[in-house]
Amino acid sequence: MAEKKAPEAVIIMGDWCDNWWAKKIVQHLDVLKITSKSYAASAHKQPLEVLKVLETYASVKNVVYITIAGLSNALSGFVAANSTHVTIACPPFKDNADMMVNIHSTLQMPPKAPVLTVLNPENCALCCKRILDLATTSG
Image (cartoon, rainbow, N blue to C red):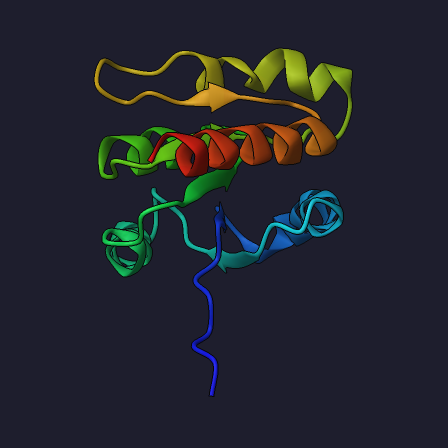
């Protein structure tokens, strides 16, 4: 029996209400043949749940985290600060006004919380592919 492959893209959203955005990203990951798994856990309300997800993939070699959080985005920085894997924030915005108000909580991260921000779901998937391709060609 073949061993099940660990996901290469682990999507963590602050709440399942953001699953509509995760599905857009997954659609592009699927086209690129990148396996993924989605979780919902808020860094504000369920930090221990987020840590459990990170522990699950701590020893997996090639994983990229995709975080989906709007408003006050603590999730992306929390994931990046507590993991050695690349973290890409792809925040969902209702419209341009929402983006102008809330983008700063994703862009401005504290030291030692390296987060890449990609606003477009297709570009997010392409970034995952390029990062994972680098990992497989260099090591």
